Image 1 (spheres, one colour):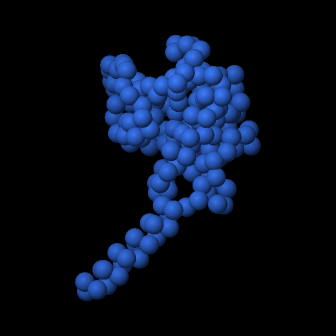
Image 2: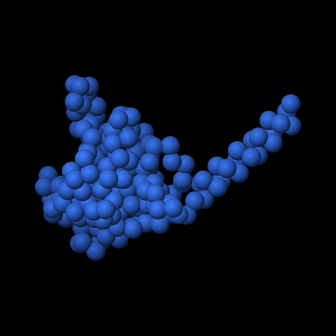
Image 3: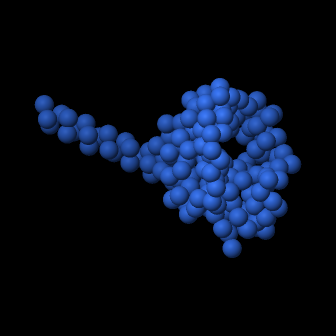
Length: 184
């Protein structure tokens, strides 16, 4: 019996390695990506607990907010070899932060086991931020989003502010932790 279990573990590790080593193509988003990326984000919103967004996006609203709207500094996606989006990252202007700052958001497909989605996206976003003349990238993360907090810390972001007990749509208070990444 143990031989069968051991063989299954070896096979499972091989499958996970294959998923983890999947090749990613990172590219700028285009309006034609709006429907697929809105679906990806809406799945994250529906699951709850990792994004400040609570209302689903239509493809048009997604495009305006995250692809080609006036506040978009850059928007990139990571797709697998078949061209399916595995994640995306946005960098938005935010009047509260000032003109030399960008506000980042990173979203990976739920259940995606591909390692490196976020770091591949961040390399592209960081290059675009520098090209746009930004000095600082802000990431404001829900305190209950452990994955997001871990990701941004791994990318080199450091805490600089906490907004206490920001209410969700249902009134639940959740802290928001703001982290910064200095570009210069």
